[in-house]
Structure formats: structure tokens, C-alpha cells
Amino acid sequence: MKVFVGMSGGVDSSLTAALLVEQGYDVTGVYMKNWTQDLPGMKCPWAEDLADAKRVAVQLGIDLKVFDFEADYKQKVVDYMIDEYKLGRTPNPDIMCNQEVKFKLFLELSLENGADMIATGHYAKTENGKLIIAEDANKDQTYFLYRVDSKALEKTLFPLGGYKKPEVREMAKSRGLYTATKKDSVGICFVGKVGIKDFLGQYVSKQPGNIIDKQTGKIIGAHEGAIFYTIGQRHGLDVGGGLPYYVVGKSMEKNEVYVTTQLNTKELWLQTINLTSAHWIGEKPSEGEYLIRVRHRAPLVKAGMTFDGDNIVLKLDDAQRAVAGGQSVVIYKDNICYGGGIVV
Picture 1: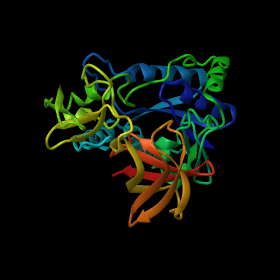
Picture 2 (picture 1 turned 90 degrees about the vertical axis):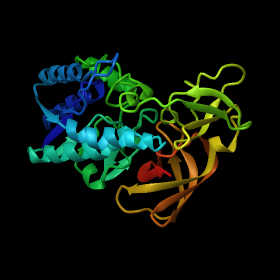
Picture 3 (picture 1 turned 90 degrees about the horizontal axis):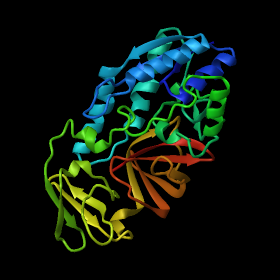
Picture 4 (picture 1 turned 30 degrees about the vertical axis):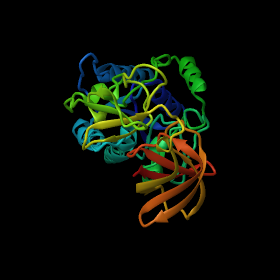
């Protein structure tokens, strides 16, 4: 069976390729060239990552192809992210990348090039088109995969789903893989260590405005643009003295950011969450009790799910903090990821 493995130049995808070779698959590595643009003070690591992927492919004795998705990626992931921030929302580009690029464009082009299946280094499990939580609950990436179709999952292998991250490191070291000790990438998925404020600053001009205390209505500071702030944010406010302030709201029209020192304020905690743009892996589930996750690595919490037309209404047992419009909430039961939606 021919498998095309998405190789990013990191340890997870490197071991994924190695395990599949050992299991007897006919493996071809693929580096997805999604983003090559340098930013001020930060060189895009794509060339280094590609070189690392090539080194591992040589070690494993497999071919490495390069699929150039840069134009599609800019349109479907980067532009989407920028547009969402301009609307005052908090999008997740990793989720859109999985939906539009890795499990759509990469899958389609791999099949066109003779692959029977694709594989990635995601920490997740799949069985009969279902998406299942990984063995390593701390690394589980089903949150980022909830918008992938079941038909795509039927053509996908996740070899790392049954391992914990420390095991993966040790297995890579024991095989002498070049990337065994390479650090995991952090920050925005496509620009490495650059923060979201620095990245958006390349596309959006600064618009100074007021930071307003929600309790008193007083102006207590200034900001460089409401677009750069998200609900629950504490750092980067530059409001001195006393208790720390948290962002509880903003107005894109007035270019104002609203803050409070009161962690228990109702604006910071949601007991009911409304979701739009619902996506289900397979058939739409019935209403009832489920577990939900409001962000990657957030704990699973109980919620009652009902439907309001095409929208999802979640009534939570325990209120969740700092849930911002544009974020994804993902829905689970019995370790199976059913899908989810985007916070209104």
C-alpha cells in the first residue's frame, strides 16, 4: 500500500514515516510548502525544515516530494485569519489549515500521484472514518482536526496516536533519526516564534485607541489597535499599578478595549455558548449530554447540546473562562470527537 507522509521536518512526522517504513508500507515523504515569507526580525524556517525532512528521507531510503500550496494557503488560511481578526474575532489558523490544506489539498494531490493513503504526525486516532482521542491526552490534537471530513479520515493514518510524546522522542533517538532532538515548533503554525501582534502588524496599520475600565467607565490607558486584543488577555496591556487587568470586551467600531480587575465578572465566564459553522464528522449527532473542549489542552467539561436551526447551543455545567468569538469549541463523547463549531 502506497502512503504519502506529510513531513514537516519535525520529530513527530519523521517518526511517523519511519514507523510506516518498518510496517512494510510503500512510503513517500511530502513536504508541504505553505509559507516562505520572512518577517521583520524573524526568518521563516521553511528552508531549514525542508532540509531536515530531506535528511530524514535519505536516512529512511524514501523519496521526498515538495507540494507547493503557498498560494492556496495564503488565501484559505492566512487571509481568513486576518479577516477574522479585523472583525474583532479570535480565529484558529491551525484548524483551517487542517480543513483546507492538509486533509483536502494534500490528500487530493497525494491520491492523484498514486497514493492509497496519507499519514501525518498528529496525535490522534482514526477508525472507520471516526476521530478518536490520542493515547497522550496532553498532546491530543483532535481539537485541531474536528473540521476534517470522515471520508478524508478513512484515507488517513495517524501512527503516533497510540504513543506518548516522551516515547516518540525515545523511539526517534533509538532509530538515530536526524530530528530526534529538534525542538517542537511554537507560536503561529506558519511563522514559528512570531507573536500574533507582530504578524498582524505586517497587514494592519496601527490605530491608537483607549483602554477603558469596564467598572468605572474611565480611560486608564492606550492601545495600538483593538484588533490586537482578545477576550481574557492579561499581558501586553501596559496598564500599570495595582491588580492585573483582563480584557473583557472590545468595540471594533469605536476602537476601544474594555478591561477589568475582577476575574469573576460575568463577561469573562460563559455558561451558555452558541456555535455557528457547525461541522460534523459523519452524521449529525442527536441532542443530549456531551463533553466539550473550548481550546486546545483545555479540560473536557460537561455540556448539554441542543440545536437552534443550523446553530449549536451548549449549556455548560461549569462556566468557562475567556471564550472569544471566532474560537472553536469541539464536542466529544466516549473518546470520540463528533465535530464542533465556531463561537458566535
